[in-house]
Length: 335
Ligand code: ADP
Ligand code: MG
Image 1 (cartoon, rainbow, N blue to C red):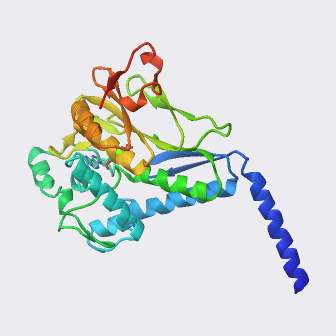
Image 2 (cartoon, rainbow, N blue to C red):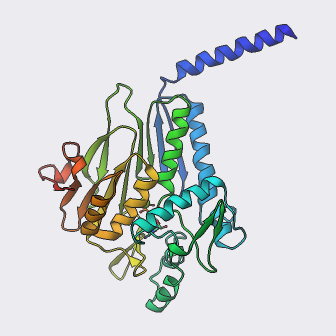
Image 3 (cartoon, protein in one colour):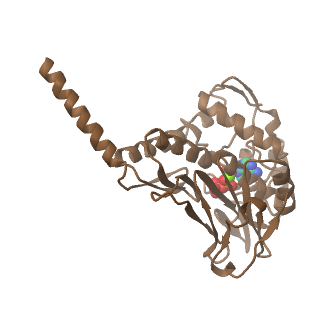
């Protein structure tokens, strides 16, 4: 018995050494989740990255609006009024962004998003009467949370799609750090989360896509930050020569058309950056500039439909225009 114990201990120690050594290994994992392609790149061993994939799948199975077993689906269909503590905390964060952006972000937009077919792929343009009726079900301020139970008025439905990937980035980054990883890059369908720095200690250089032409807009250098972009080009359909995209202005029920082609939000909190990228896209340049001046915790890059780039003051000296924009000078929004 004693012999066995010693052998087990020795094996455990060996495993420990291997894990220690393995931290400098480079691993990759790809996963299709949350309706998008995700790429995880980390200086860690494979098993840690596999754990990250499992974590992403478990978050998806909690938050999906279409999976009949998810907490959100059960909440929306009136089968349940209590959610896990983690989901309740995320919903509180989301609701606070809804309030601070005056409803430009509204997590109760789902009845409208569903009518447009954005979560199911059955795209259609809803009529004005239908939209008016559905907008009667949209009001984040009517959602109540007591502890982990959620009070959702009849017919209202929640969609955390605007914030889920940013939140997932936060959760995966924390998990990787707990497992000793100090260098990783997560691309969660255009939501980038940089964990630590590059192995040589320098910052990660993150490229931002140009929605016009498919090249690059520019780059920013970051450590331990999320870089989240929202744009009308990501998911859309065309009908009668008109494009309709998946970010909806809750004040009209129509795709947000505020004069921006894309908004990139950069900050430490991925959930906040994701929620804000959607909200600022709805708010437009002037509204976003005003919001940035009165709120902390993020910087942003805007591309207007006129093709001009604007960056908030904190990105001066960090944002580098690239591609077709390489010779342009970004306009700066000062506090
Ligand atoms: P993506 O998911 O493509 O990265 P976003 O983070 O901007 O883009 O989230 C868009 C998703 O959020 C939509 O697919 C829809 O489910 C939902 N949504 C659309 N408009 C709003 C809005 N004004 N407020 C909250 N959620 C929204
Ligand atoms: Mg978002």
